[in-house]
Image (cartoon, rainbow, N blue to C red; front, side):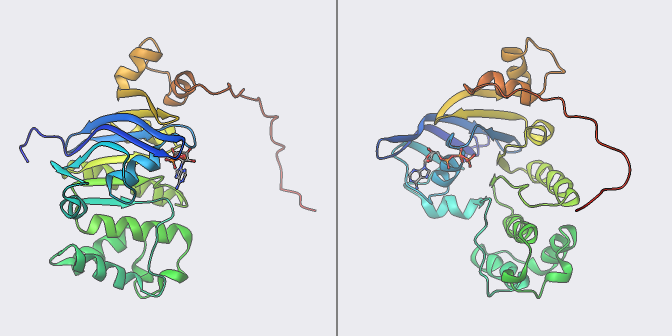
Length: 265
Ligand code: ATP
């Protein structure tokens, strides 16, 4: 791969389920070191795009490449360089946390993984759970373990589908910092999320999808210039509602909360 070639390149990606079109000629590129926020209403085609890029589902048309390799023609080359963490990670329930690291290190040929496992486990508060079975982890811990396994082999393309789901506030901050670090070490990152403030915090670019079609693709500055007259105080959430064709949701003024102790019963 030449250095100028983007790490992730998707051209005219289409996916149909019978009559339903889940992705309609989606195209974008992500160079090394950049973070793309993939946003859009439920059913927009975000998960479909990530699953097709990793070969979990076949595309109906277009090309999907990682590091110059096509998922159709060189699926192994793509999979060796890519990590996909879905929002409901499938773990091996009877394997321990430590065994998940060992298994991942084995299939991705990671040397010196033990030290790296200890670092990641400490960072994501999993040290005390190294010998626990995946079946006995909480939802947030399962999510953290899947993310740690993805980080273990330092993928060139990192795809995170709703990665904050189930994480506590400390976990969310830790994850945000770690995603930025992954980009700094040269990964091209896609984050699909409905948490628009988080996307605004850490993404360089956004791709807004709606019903399988691209509504916008560009930097946050370009997004503001196009939809908010360059007003820097306009949030991504404000712009999101201007961009997608949904019925406006009013902001309701909530009554002031009563002070004093909670009363139950
Ligand atoms: P969400 O925000 O709810 O996760 P999404 O943007 O990730 O949504 P997708 O899961 O990509 O949306 O779904 C895009 C469209 O494809 C939807 O209309 C969905 O019903 C359809 N779809 C997804 N998977 C299948 C499937 N296996 N069979 C049929 N239709 C599917």
